[in-house]
Image (cartoon, rainbow, N blue to C red; front, top):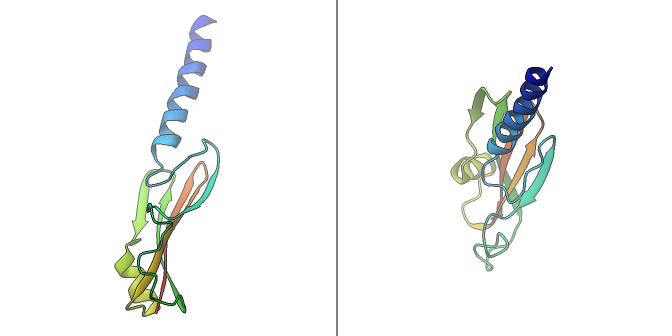
Amino acid sequence: MRFLKLVKITSVVSLTFFYTGCVQNTPVAGMIYSDIKHSGLGTGGIINDGVQPTKEGYSICQSYAGLVALGDCTIEEAQRDSGITKIRSVEYETIIYPFYGKFTTVIKGE
């Protein structure tokens, strides 16, 4: 009986480390679900105040069950997606479910 209890406790602790350790570039993480938006910069995401935010560009990376991760979530890909040449701000969105994760880079500019 003690062995079964030890296995359960070890499983819960291992899963906790597994799920919270998989999140990158996010200020906080929930073990079961996370939906976070943040600038990732000390400036609140603003890079160039003189540029108007007339366009938005997105680039996305996704993870499936923590086993396979795909995508290009770079600022450069977001620029190609939107045609932005002058960047005003960069923000990041992270969504984590137990078996699915999505990281999006959002840029605004001209």
